[in-house]
Image (cartoon, rainbow, N blue to C red; front, side):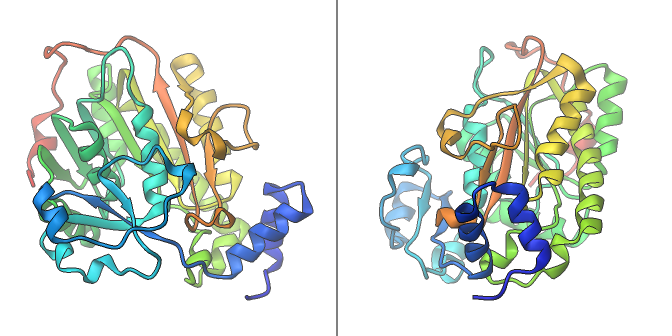
Length: 329
């Protein structure tokens, strides 16, 4: 176990009023955990049988976990398994699955989202989860960084994700086109935003700058811009999922707070019932935190927002611009 830095201790004090809770958080943050990895099954039932993997022990906190997601025994390396190359599954850490699962609550009077935009999609975990959970008629996965876009396209193709397209646009470009049209085009927009990555030490990955106020401030500013653009892309009655893999309230609750204030009653945070045990105590609106001392994963934050208005329930909803769909997977 490494000694927590002063900035880590300051963060722990922000998150926890109780000294015992602070100690458990810091201990987990500075002692890399042997967390159970996770896979999303993308292949056939036969492939699941052919490429069987050892499962983690059942956990009653996770009864909501979809059938296509499986936690594996700690120490399992699914990325080295033949099923990975065959596209039978997508491997990721459980924290990512936990955050993505908020979209399971995106089911209102218009049914499940049919058009999904993943704004910061690489390497592809949230897009794969959305495809399996929602079965959208259109999945547009966007990534502005060229090298990461190549990884994203490879993963979507490897996992045979249907109805998928990729783009390399600044989120502001999507927002500008939506504003010209006078409405958003997507029933669900995912903003898994770049962040300071304060959960990385819990995985054993050094990230000393993550806790510096300047790092947090810079990321919060960028996240607010991304979330503002994302909100413009949401159709009436649609959903917006905001997620990070960091702990700072400035990058999490405060970013969501800003967009809710900016949009007035146009956006509201909604409950995600299965995540209730992890509801944040740092905001009056519903949002959720996973910390490493849970033993489940290194950590994440998620909030699910909904735009006011009635969703389009017919096929006459205006389609997104064709140029956005220039690159099918």
